[in-house]
Length: 441
Image 1 (tube, rainbow, N blue to C red):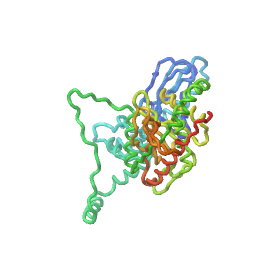
Image 2: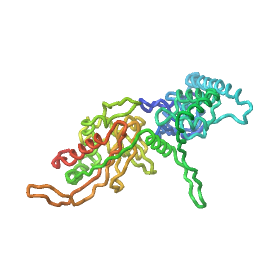
Image 3: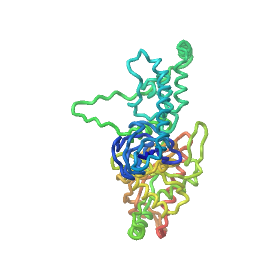
Image 4: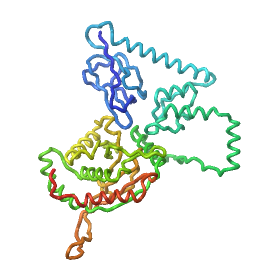
């Protein structure tokens, strides 16, 4: 019997590992070609790995919850046919033996240190993702799960890196006497620091329903808390007369759907205007690294998209300023559709430099969104409503019914001041109010 290795595929240029969330097939199960055998997760995107061959699964090398590097063998399928000396199986055996050897070496020091403890340390119950290297260091140094959870990560999405855990261990092993002396000196020369903020203890009452957050909701919650801690948020507002935009869309939408087979919404128009305004004010299309400001060359705008399960994902349209309105429309429709059907690739939710969220889709007038780190601003689009407005004409001021919308922008006050935010919003207002109602698409 010939054997075939199923490997963790490369899912994007910046993706180096993924977490196995659920095995869809187990040892002994027969699989057809292209049958999904395992679900994996990278940050916010869930994907399935299909079997490229037909056969029977004879081995799985990782358990649910394990973080696996791209290119690693995760399962072995036995196929009908010649053995060919099990050429494919040998690397699997060697890799598995090497993995077991590494695990034993990593566990040995920890076991020696923890001889008096009742059970070995396990990190399987953690809600956070830790790389194999971080887990190995933690296990070797006998770091408990509670300690590991308390370490503030400096990696992507708050992930704990090798340097983070090494810095923690260095501080942990510092002399208690030095720490006490330092504390005593600090107390005599400096005011006491406020205690760390902790979430209040919440007790469930009789009849209350407890729903555990799923993985995506946990990531969203952690990311939102991190953003508010990192950036001092300020929000500015401006109202916009989008009557020209509304009239134009009403005029072209039926013809567009008949010609292109898809709808045209207001979103592509907002994306086009946002990109033009970012070209005029590049400091809004930026990130902060310590005391350095990184002005982004590309204008990659994220589109906050609500999912059917109530969660949120932000696919990114790359180089919006290089696309025409038709190209933006097709990108918006494609990404929104695949986001709702869990068909996005990992690279399609990364690399954003600015984000737009649409409160108006739920009839909300406006809101104060949270910045999508490491960006420095996020634009919120409110509901479009008919309102009486004063218009200046050659014959004098008149009151007319117009389509009015509120734009709000939350920004990082470390580098974006109210003046800059105000100029950006004013530019958006000019672009939308002067939209050509005779425009072709």
